[in-house]
Length: 310
Image 1: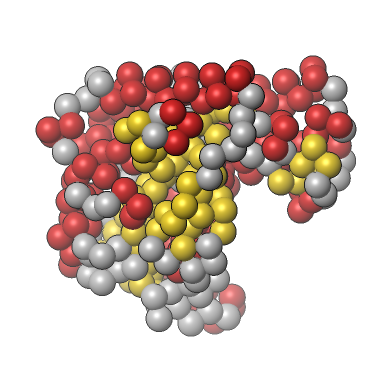
Image 2: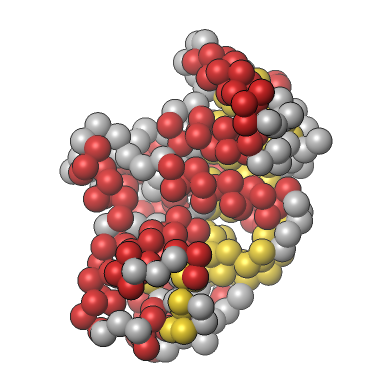
């Protein structure tokens, strides 16, 4: 059976571990620095196996040695946003956390694929790349799947249709600079540009851009974890099962879309080796401009941190 590690035992991490086990994608190691917490959550999850009918094993650990030979490592560790805190406010604090995790992954699971969930996601994906020394195909950020899911949710709600029929496409950075693409977003193959007027689409785009902040404001003391964990597991499943699904993911661009050396959400084929192909959509001048602006904002934040510390 495959082995999947989740680093960070908070709401996102523990929910991710539970979903992986219930889908029987592999045995799970849940790692967290808080003594007893990952062990307790793992035991609780294991006791649910008799009810949920899964045979995946789950263990908790405060050290990294049990992650040895993991096929995929999902990094959720880091500080969560609080009300009024932008994702990029977390930049320097979470850099040290993610860099430390990536070094341990390199030490104990050097052949694994890394999926980064920690915020600010696109920047932390680059930090994980540098700190692990892995090829970029094996370090992937979870961004577009979540942003597209939020866009799809709002569209289905607006049109009063099943969300199963909505295929949304959101590219760019994971934050206010994301780039929802209405032309490539469909309901049973019908572009939403034929189903909704421009003003309604723009309102849905705006709500999608602030989807995470809306939840933070409502919760007051935390941030989203159900949709982020589901999105991460979607990526894990495509890799573990070599499904070769084309998902919007944060990957290191190497000239695609005229962008170089930055992690950005684009359509990518995910298989057993990680990122197998990056797809370049035929974007309009405005869409491409928005994508390049998103990349520029992320590069600006990269310039604010010292990558030598990774």
